[in-house]
Structures are given as C-alpha cells and as structure tokens.
Figure: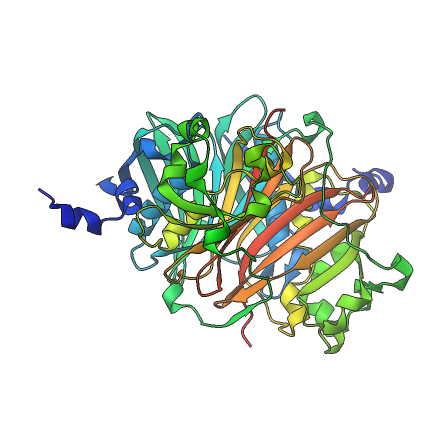
Length: 276
Length: 276
C-alpha cells in the first residue's frame, strides 16, 4: 500500500502516462479523463503516452529527437494500446513506429527518431529570440478561466498556466488578431517535465486560432515535435504562432523555452480551421 | 517506340518518379542517378517517389497535405520498392504509411495525410511575408557552380536555380552567417511541378548550414512537408532558414511560394550538423 509520501513522488504526468508491456513491443495504457478537451482527449497527451512506450522499446535511446504524429480519430478516456515496432536501431539514434489504438481503432500513428540528448554535443548557437513575457505576477492564470470553459476543458487543470495579458484578449471577446498566444507553464503538481513530457507541452496551449477570433475546436491532422535538449528545472515558456491560415487549414508553430533560456522544443502542426 | 515529340510530353520529374504497382499496395520504382548528391540520392526526390506511390494508393485523395518522413539509411541509384498501407480513408482525408526500401533495407519511412487541394476552401489569410528576391537576371544561376561542386551534386542539373546574390557568399568562401538561403527555382526541362513535386522542392536548395560556413553533408533525420495549395504555373521561390543550431543538430525551415504569391508549401527538417 502506497503511503501518502511515496504517492507524492510519482508525478501526475508519470501516473497518467504509465504503460505496461503486455506483449512484444505492445503496451497497455489508460487514457485519463483529466485530459479531456471538448469531444476528445488532448492530442499532446496521447502523443506523450506513445512517446513513453517508444522510450521503453529502445531503452538506450530514452529521448525523443523528432516525433511525427498523424491523427486518425479522436481519443477517448479509457484503455488504450500502443503497438511499437523498431524500424532501425543504430549507435546514435533509433527509428520506431507506434500506433495508439482503442477498441481496435487507431487513434494516432507515429514515426519517431529517438536518441540520448545527454550524449549529444553541448554547442548552442540559437539565433531564435526568447519570448518576452511579463513576470508571473502580471500574467493571467488559467485557473481564472470561466467555469463553462473549464468544464469543457478539464485538461486546463493539469497545468499551472500564466498567460501573457497581451495575448489573452480572446478570453474576453477581444482577440488580438495576431495569431499569437504565449504563456508561462508548469505542471499543476509542481513536478518537472522530462523530454517525453515536452511532446505534450507542444500541444498544451489553446489553439492559436482563439487569438484570431475563432474559438472552435481545431482538429489536428499532423503534429511533429523536435526535442532539442533536456529542459532545465523550473517554469517553461510556451509560444504558439500561425502565419498561414489558408485553404481551410492552418499551421501552428510552438516553441518551448526552458528556465535557462534554451529553446528545448519546436513543433509544427497542421490543423483544420474551426468552423465559423 | 516513342517519337521525339511524345517524349517531350513526359516531364523528367514524372519519368524519374514513375512507379509500377507490383502487388497489393506495393510499387516498384527506379531511383535515377541524376539525383545523386554526395554519397546518396537527394532525400526530397526519394520522398517524391514515395509521394507518388501514396497518391496511387488513394486515387480520390491525389494531393499530399502533410507528409512526415524519417530517414533510416542513404538511398542509392537503382531499383527501389515502395510498400504502402492505407491506415484510414475518410471523406476528406486519408492517412497512409509508406516505406521505401532497396534490397530489403528501409531507406525512408513515411506517414502521410492526403486529400484533394482543389476541393478545399479558397480562403487565404496568410500573414507570412513573401521572400524578396532580385529579378532573375540579377540572381546567380546554379549552372555557374564550380565543376567540382557539380560533379558531387548532379542533382543540381535537375533544376534551373537562381540564387539571391545576398545569400550565395558561401559559394565563394564568404558565407553570410545568417542561416538563410533563397532562390528562384523551376525544373530544368521547363515542366511545372505538381503538389507531389513540392515534396521534393522543399529539399532542393543546398543545406542552410552552407550559409553558416559549414559546407559538409547534413544527414536528415526527419522531414515534414505541408502542401497548402496547387502551385500556379511559373517560377517558384524557395527559402531555407535555421534558427536553432544546437546540440549537434539543426532545424531547417523551407517555404515554397508560387508565382501568384501564395505560400504553397512549408517544411521543417531536423538534421545532424555537418562535421567541422
């Protein structure tokens, strides 16, 4: 029986992405209802569950470097299976395919290149500019969201999110129109995210289309994440931008910066525009 | 026997990406030596061959929307097989997995979401800014590259490429250091590229690391392309940028703009830095 103290040692993220190997490269998981948003389960969370199974499939390559997910159907809370297949394992990187399914229906199909970020060179010549955010105390906590918003997005309870006031006009009916949302973020239970957790962080902010005055659900077709470093402990800064809203679709670029000022993850997704 | 005139009707691109269905979802192809660069075959070309096979596997969804490729081993000129597997086909989009192999070794593994760009909405609210390039006559033709460069990169013969002089300093030992290369581009035979051809266009420019003074080969780990519209006829403008050279890797973002000023494709790849 776990004592209160030992249960504190397991982060909510680790508990919600726990997997059991039930066959050769086949893992069982339980998608937690705490990640529901709208009619499904947050896509970044489902990718994180897949990411954990992939890490288990190639133990000497614990970290995602590049992970591409194509979304086939909406995930639901409840049991899920992750079938992994190692396509190639070399000295530095491994390539793994993974499918997350529920009751025989594929939810997401994933191709991943994994490695060991701790063994990579330490050079940093990043020219991308860190997001400028007001101090935490001047940002808007996600917990201040209206009750009806939080009811359809329990996923918001997983994070301590502090939005840049300049990008939060959509919450009060005054979207900036810039296609930009940024926030401080850490997990609600105070635990740090590991590199697999960054797969989820890249899909944690609301869709950038909120800032364009389109508050509906934006179904992801594809999401690719590059994880570039193990994040330093502390608050992360997340930024979502779009520059090509066209043809019924839009791209959403996410950057994740850590407390040490390193660009630790970059992602891009292609999503369908919300219906007007 | 083909007359000279009818042979002109088939573009080099179509000829080099021709596929034969040799089994259920299994296609034979011949990787043309004209696409060699350094020790292998251009990765965008191999992705184009895969893209053609995927289009054949889902005939009512002829166009790539989002295509993710993970590169497992270097392709060589000669016979190749593309094994496709339709994961889901709905009313609007289909998701297909494809593996390109040679002599039993997987070269690239692909996940693709295909649809019909002609059936998508016509809205364009792009805020990304078109690349500014000098007129063709003031740009530097790829055909002016030194003989020894062209010998290791026959792929350059496939294109009529006109580089922005501001981004071509690397060719004379004076890289700008900005991590930016841009050029006008069309196929050498004057034929237009279709949406599948844009998969290749996103990997047609030299690696952006040339502009950082690192002229070596940069092995791609992963390349994802979003194709957003059928390109208008005429010259394309290609732009490569990097903003996160770190940890032994770098990301390379490509934009493809058509002659009508539309951002028709966006891609990002993760590659290993060239050795110093």
